[in-house]
Amino acid sequence: MMKRWIGAREPRRRMWTLGFGVALLPLFPLTAFGQETPEEIVRHVDELLRGESSQGRVTMEVVTERWSRSMEMEMWSLGDDHSLVRVLSPAREAGTATLMVEGDIWNYLPRVDRTIRVPGGGMGGSWMGSHFTYDDLVRESSYVDDFEIQEEFAGVREETEIWEFRLTPLPEAPVVWGHLELEVRQDNRMPREMRYFDDRGDLARTMVFSDFEVMDGRLVPTRLTMRPEDRPGERTTLTYADLEFEVGLDRGFFSLERLRGRR
Image (cartoon, rainbow, N blue to C red):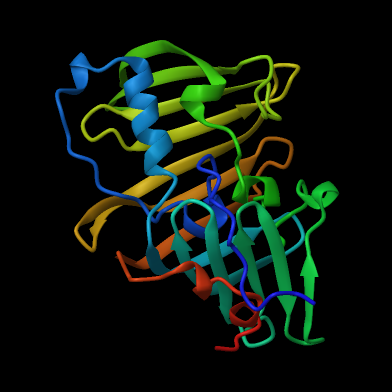
């Protein structure tokens, strides 16, 4: 029999809930950026993307060659390993939900009242028809611990002062990419762009962070756009409308009952 709530194990501290909580961002004090090392700057971005106890609303727009659609969703996040996202509209999708607890992921399909656990072999599949994958939701690598970090550029690009870092996976790191290129704004250490390269060195996709605003007292990029390189013109954009932090959630909130919309 499945337990009524999940998460009794100690959380693994190397998770990244991108799809659920990539913009549930903590505010870090701004220091003398020019005195920081590349590792310190990248660590800030790494921790920035991991999230805190949060609740928010987001619109996800998916544009493909053949169709496009938009969904409004509500999401909750606790630490970096408990997340829940539920579709609010359109009506035909309402109630569809995804739960992540310590790297395990379940989907709920309200039309058939069915809960489905995502198998390990399905982690590379599309999440809710978007250009994000389940692997994106559960990133088990740490930029600082699992990559060699090199500063490739520091200066003005497109009228913005940035740093550009090349992140090369260490031999035993749990990373599927050949390397990453990260651009960070110098004025506030906000991520500007992340480029993902395959093991042949070809650009596979690009994620752009934009529309920086203060929400609930914290600076966040409120728009994230993922663009696949092999499908020009296609994209998935996450636009955050509301974000609240320190909302008093506990692990018991992230249960299969809650996934199905039951208290």
